[in-house]
Length: 88
Image (cartoon, rainbow, N blue to C red; front, side, top):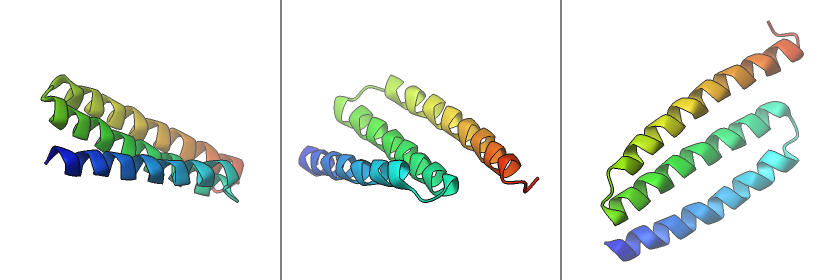
């Protein structure tokens, strides 16, 4: 079971690198925002997988706080993008 989780962690890390490329080279601000949101979601999953491997429950609290901060940041940034583009 640990080896499957280890390979999953490696695979998620590689896909995070692909999302970083989209976040840097994205054609619009909305594409960049979505890429950063995907990166944060994958990071939360990575934290939870490490928590499961190490049998440490406090990582779950860290993942929950990270998810809340990520959600609030996404809402604020999308609001700023909408105001800047005149959609509000």
